[in-house]
Length: 289
Ligand code: ZN
Image (tube, rainbow, N blue to C red; front, side):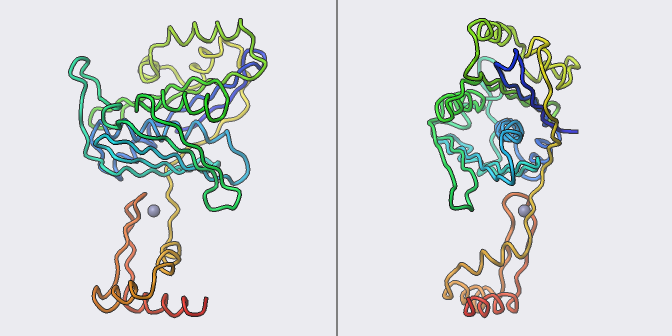
């Protein structure tokens, strides 16, 4: 089952997160019918989302947003700290490879643009922070984000191996705590330099705990494990509320010209049909408000 581990390591000088996200990414691939490069890009973003689950407490909702000028356009991942995630991609049909290496060209598919982290967008004390994309490869971009925006020197590694289906997906984040010594920093740098890539480690049979031990040089103290799942959570009521925010003229058009409305959730493809009756009721409720 997909999950994320969080541990402290190096005598409390570092924090390490490790996640396996194969099912999450495969579910996103099926829902959005993504082609391989889009699968890898969205899968990497979902994996960062999974890794970030233990970073937030209470009922936090966090949205990760990538806006690039590459063929993919934009991507969104919503995270709640119970380990439920959902994703959206503007252009799922992107399949481009690097001519030299033959690898999926995620950076080129994403392009230049921005990465935004929105926290609790529905609340008053919401928080949002943006940085420029560094390579569009997602891992590098979040390394930059954590280091710059959250002032936490970090290293983010995420990977998705996809043939027709998703074979392996997962990642890690190592964050240095303010008391990190030179010795620990050098040790971590050495380990990262010799790393073979997350999907290769899974391919070699390593589990998340093995990867944690490798990254921590066996100094890990496991704090918790959280199950990760793709879950949208939308309801007809949610879209009713959304329709209620439209002006009457537009609702009239839906009622008298379109004779109803069909809404498709962009995160899970669930279809909601609103009949003329439904829409008239929404208009009535609007008047009461
Ligand atoms: Zn939905």
